[in-house]
Image (cartoon, rainbow, N blue to C red; front, side, top):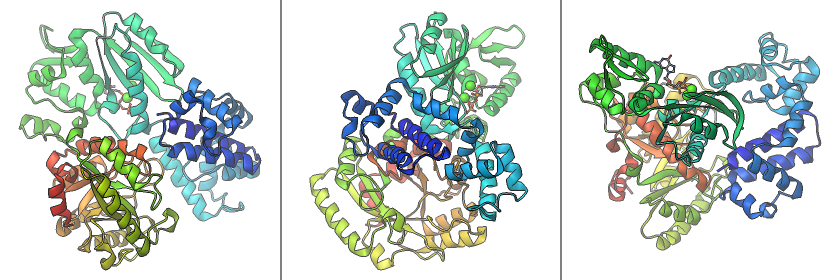
Amino acid sequence: MKNQFVAETLYMVADLLDLKGDLFFKTRAYRMAAQTIEALDDDIEKIVRQGTLESISGIGEALAKKITELVQTGKLEYLERLKKEVPPGLIDLLSIPGLGPKKVAALYKNLGISTIQALRDAAGNGKLRSLEGFGEITERNILRGIQLLEKTSGRVLLNVAYEDGNRYLTYLKKNKKIKKIDIAGSLRRMKETIGDIDILALSNDPETVMDHFVQYPEVAEILAKGITKSSVILNDHLQVDLRVVDEKSYGAALQYFTGSKDHNVTLRGFAIKKGFKLNEYGLFEKESEKYIAGKTEEDIYKRIGMAYIEPELRENRGEFDAAKNHTLPTLVTPDAIKGDFHVHSLWSDGSDSIETIATVAEKRRYDFIGITDHSQSLKIANGLSEERIQKKILEIQKIRKKHPELRIFCGTECDIKTDGTLDYSNKILEHFDFVYIAIHTAFKMDKETMTRRIIKGMDNEQVNFLAHPTGRLIGKRDPYEVDIEQIIDAAKQTDTRLEINSFPDRLDLDDVHIKQAKDHNIGFVLGTDSHSINHLDFIRFGIATARRGWLEQKDILNTYSVEDIEKIIGT
Ligand code: DGT
Ligand code: CA
Ligand code: CA
């Protein structure tokens, strides 16, 4: 679906109009439309095809025309024109987390700041605090924002690359000259952010394949076109590299271009010790250069004397020892997942009814779904009062009758207050089938206080799961200060499962912490944190992150039978 891409483009238009100081109602119209499209359950491409854009509230004739252009060509002439009207550096400034168009305009007008470097200097020298609407805190946040941006700069979230990559693959597969094709690189390893997409194809007619590759409608620019390698930039600025190889080298090339680089360097070392030479063309005898293997990755690992290593494990984090000792984990697979524990409904800040969610869950062949709306004090997210909880439970009881095959759990995502007490009393918590706890306020605490706050929450015997344990938003917000070792210990003590939040900008816990917690025998749950039925697909990224954290089926509650889950959560 291109919904997110369309929404982001419209946000960009609104930002640029704001930068120019355009009228408020005009910029607001773009933002409202962007929000609507973001939360839309239907595919925007389908709506454009049907010509029914204008039936969406807030989208008139002019906007419909622009959205149609964007969906059909991948570009928006109006945006390109706007971009030319503002100093180019200002657009970069907009990408700094926490810096909106109003502030960027003020920085430019009053201090002439139009580059990230100039902004960093000014903030570092305390020159921003004198501006109206700025202060020492803003100054510090801007510096943090620049650091965050640099950490992720040029990289996109996994879901963006995943969609781009798979759309491209579907297009490429139409070419009959391609015998085999795979995604390689960090996208095959399902890393949380992706620098560029690497694709590998097998063909005896690379020229034709490369012609087809560069003719993809979403290509904005061709960087290089050769017989073995071509590179393009897509409309959303992501780079895609295609390499075409022959059959004898396909497995070797797939292994090489999947990486990671660290993994490859170590593997090559093992090959050398065995008297081989390993490169992207194959595995060869060192002296005679005789070809040993290269058709498949499995052959290569086997001939080097170890078990096959799944792409998600190829980070040089202990996989070689495990492969040699035959202790590699049997990684959890998507078909083992029987449901999703973390879904918001219309009752709080979700955009779909429980009935709709239940219908979609059944379509996904889930055995259960956990509806987890926010708790009472989270007013901005329409958290539930005790009275509304009772009404919600009544609604769920009705819906259960219509969906006898699906177990609908009535859960909650209950806030941990600053002092570590929970947002509902234990008497209220008893009404829920399970209880997630989470931090949504007062992120800026010192490590000790924050750790104590969370552990106090986990100590409550009604609590089952800890949601997004570190609170990070990739590229936008650092994790809060928290001692993960102590949280892991407390999870063990209190029998609290840690969530792998599967929303692409969270992926929290991350792969490294998951493995650390698994080594302490902690249990996990997967939750998408869906706020729309479109988000249910994000479970895929949670599963991938679990795999990168070495998890097996038994480590994840979502793979258990409903009966066993009920026993464990104590409903
Ligand atoms: P990315 O694109 O930054 O998210 O990460 P990757 O892992 O996709 O890196 P990329 O696209 O630069 O290269 C793809 C793979 O090619 C990489 O994972 C391993 C392999 N590769 C690239 N350069 C080297 C190298 O200098 N040595 C070795 N052994 N492998 C390399
Ligand atoms: Ca790459
Ligand atoms: Ca690459």
